[in-house]
Length: 180
Image (cartoon, rainbow, N blue to C red; front, side, top):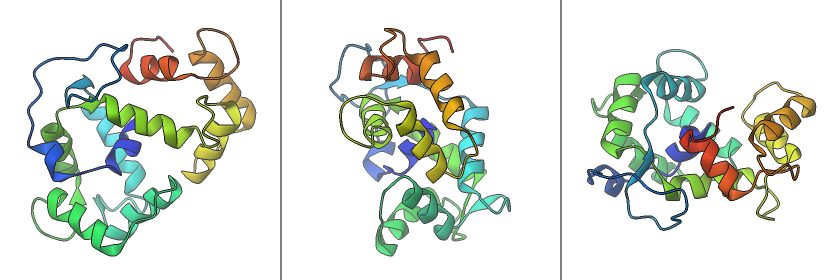
């Protein structure tokens, strides 16, 4: 899910830097360095989320639809700029090869991406992600799961047992430092 949330924030400047170090979970500043690197399988799962008609490529319409589900309204011009960067072969679509290359050039998921993802998940802005927040996001993304399933997801990440996911727990989950 994080990569879907990261993908909406694409920009050319992110692809020009080459990271050399990793980030501490405690550091909340964005130095442009990655905190985790998704696997090819994880990237493929994200690609498949965007490719809703399963034709092996992401159209501008599919891209816009996933952003809308995440609560991000974009203009046709903004989508065109993103495709200028990501559509490496210039065919008007983003295929998996393009998608993979863009993520490779991006150097991994950065703290600012995780913070942005947290804010999208935290629908009421209270600094906590509840099972209801997870349920609402899953529904917007077209996932079929129950509120009870979402409560189990939250419980699996909630290390301090307060019933919600705070920023530290979210960061640990997204960087793979907590076992689910």
